Amino acid sequence: MEIFSYLPDHILDIILLDFWVDYFRKNVIFSINEVKNNLQEISNFYFKNKKQITYSKITNTMKTQLSAKNLYLGKIHNISSFRMFFKNSFPIYGHDDSFPDCCNYIVTYFICLSPNERFNIYYNFKLSESMYDDI
Image: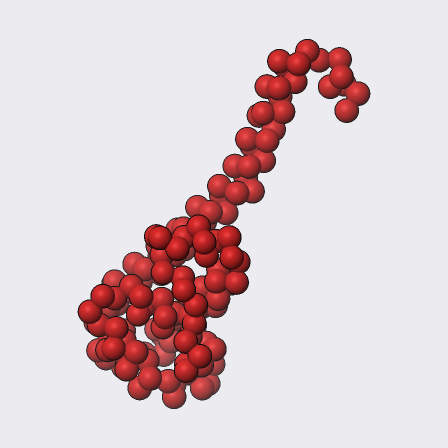
């Protein structure tokens, strides 16, 4: 830090500003954008597979995808800063204890995304609950 003491104040301000902007961008902005992109991907997955999630039996392939997405939502839910930051954009409200741990966050997320088919999603996951026992 001795080298900084020889610099004029306005040059030191420029250097430190560049350092902290870069630090903030790498540690905060990139992580927020990564979480936002992943949450958008989960929402797109729901809207792409809406009929199957809402009305028909959940397949084994979809079961593994939903389990991975549920694990990610659980991690995001446990970080309160992300939960608060995204509360107006994405419904990260918690989990439903009536479902197994492998799908409780994703069920709540899908129910919050759907304005009309909430009961159908809940009922379909309840019917498919026995297939989550082998995860």
